[in-house]
Image 1 (cartoon, rainbow, N blue to C red):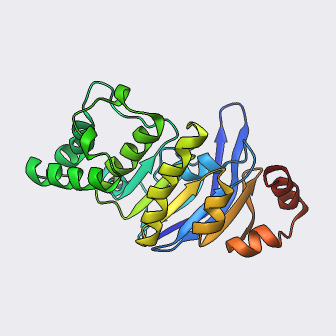
Image 2 (cartoon, rainbow, N blue to C red):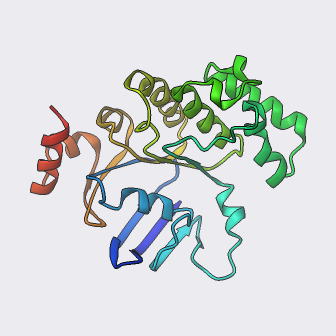
Length: 242
């Protein structure tokens, strides 16, 4: 579904964030990306829908080269939901309005249809009673669950998660991971940058370890965590898994 070829990203000042990443993400696959800070994880994820424009290389989504000159990026981005670390909800809009704005404006869908879908999604994550609340009235965990179902309102084919739990208090992490686990069970194609190793072990089809702007190692979760090959990955895992 998504394929990257020799993806490179050099930021102003000469920082090489990506150093030739070649990856394929298949339909229905859950790919979890882990690695130390500054390893290029978020840059790679954000490149998949061109929130970061690569310096070099190609990104193919369903056979279309997104780095091509005449590509309707907005159209393709509508097929990729994105969930950020810091929610990005509009503070002056109710939860329902936050969820219905993009489908109505970008997809030109009728208000009644979108509101019905939004309420069903809110029901699913246990927040139907918060439809008319404002983001400031919600906890961090509630905001992130809203951010996920807001993305789902666009009926995406792929969901990209950029450290969705790292800004949350520990007791709120579980409620967000539960929603993500349910999506995985429904075979949603997901790419997740996270520090939650338990989630990676339980839900991922494949785990990637990034360091120095490259995928240094990848494997199924059991092999990845129980039998890491490289010394770099062994050191990383020894620091984060007690």
